[in-house]
Image 1 (cartoon, helix red, strand yellow):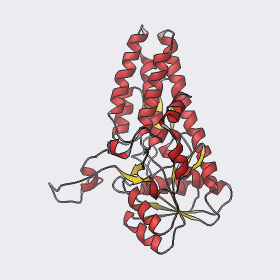
Image 2: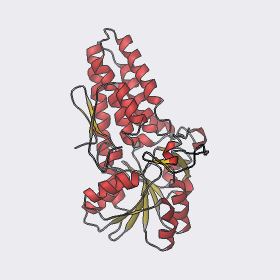
Image 3: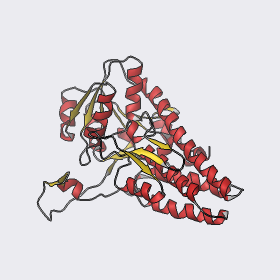
Image 4: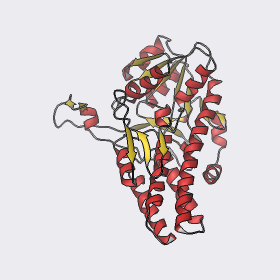
Length: 346
């Protein structure tokens, strides 16, 4: 099944906090429930957050009692503002919200027709993400050779998208081409998305995976135990890739050891109107660092720094793999914000 689905006025998705021990389906009936699931990271992964935000607005429109278009638009705007406050760094959520609102603003019809349009557009966003991931996998697989060992960080798999995955989509596509590929997955402290989610996905799919601590990356590169790095992204700006904390140090180590560093992400993750200095990096709860589960591991009242993401300058990135193909640095430099704005209208 897909990671997220629309079912007659209910959004059904996987509670990612329960994996790998339990597969619990969330049945979300309103925007507040979706927003809360995003805040608590029951729903996570930049492309999935875009689809979830679109579906949250679809819930607002579907269940609205508004008789006038102006009132329904206002309800969508209020819900959009709630969603924007959930997680500030990943751009897909903002992109999806703006796309839905722009469609609503331009629509001329009654509220029932507008509600149907919003649901249709949310489903289209989800379908496009699924198709984009397949294309990313196809293009990215050309970079993976038979026998490669690929390191990945955090979870950029089916669970982070509507289906198939970005970084893991590249690996899946290579395996589907009968290439023998092994994966090294970092645990990804503090939320352990690599240990809990990436290892779970790959093991489930029968793809060889070895789990390592985040502190082992330098060791395995020095020992020549990895050939490629493929990661996802939460936002790609003019000068950098913004992704899960720990990505930057992996990129620096990869460059030092001559290992290609690839970023796999759909165009909805591109934000070339901005630079990294203009992006808010989400700071999360200190308890994610001081505790493992319910058990405290750090002294009381200790100062904690817990940014969820870091910034990797583009000079450390070998190429970006998107649904249009493989973009090297000259290709990225030639992209203009206007082109990406046009993509949002398609």
